[in-house]
Image (tube, rainbow, N blue to C red):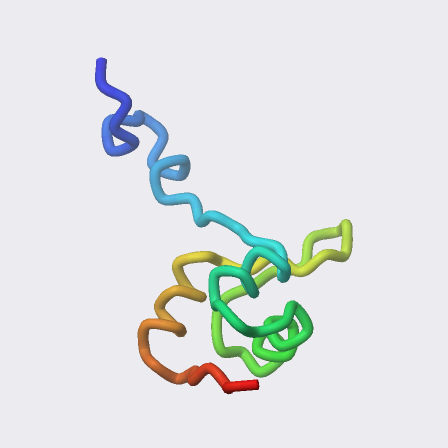
Length: 77
């Protein structure tokens, strides 16, 4: 048996999104604050959810697609 996720009998496990907290998403975005990530969530730039615990969780693949589209330009400080 291999460790490839595509061999998993449960398709929801193989396709489940990886969720990031705002701080981790900001680190992935490089040069933006967690507050900016939260603003982008409110603006609907990428997929996110807010479970019962109240923290915002960002879909990593959706964030990467947003960043890869080049809609964000780092600001020199």
